[in-house]
Image 1 (cartoon, rainbow, N blue to C red):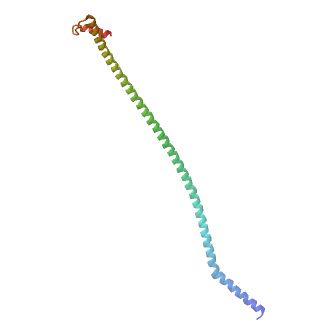
Image 2 (image 1 turned 60 degrees about the vertical axis):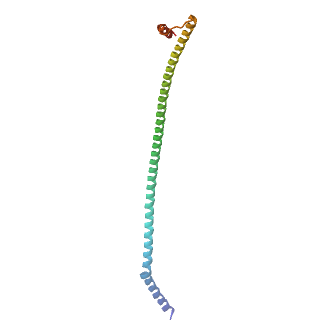
Image 3 (image 1 turned 90 degrees about the vertical axis):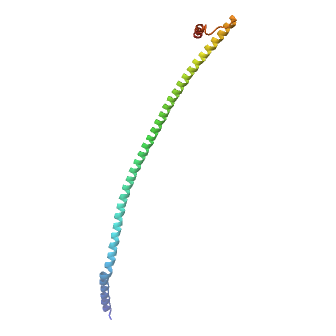
Length: 156
């Protein structure tokens, strides 16, 4: 065969190979590439959506965290105020109790003082009677001289 015939046969074989490739090989490759491009595009879209959702979630988390901090601060302030109020109430009750105890102690001391004065008056009166008895060398009758003894008690 001549070089021209070989060249023509090679061209025909090349054309058949091109046609076969275009008809049977190229469409599955193109479909696979298109499918892959679609998957990549879907993945990028999903990543964009996920990024937006993540940003929104972070905003919500920050808002909730801020609200929780505010709530905790309010609760802490309320607890501190309640504690201060309880302390003030306890101080007031303690002051009232202290005042009651002091008043009771003063009243008791006053009663004891009155009792002590009465006992002292009685003893002074008895001593006066004994002294007078010693001076007069005879017994003074308490029933007969009751008025005198009463006057003596009040003077003392």
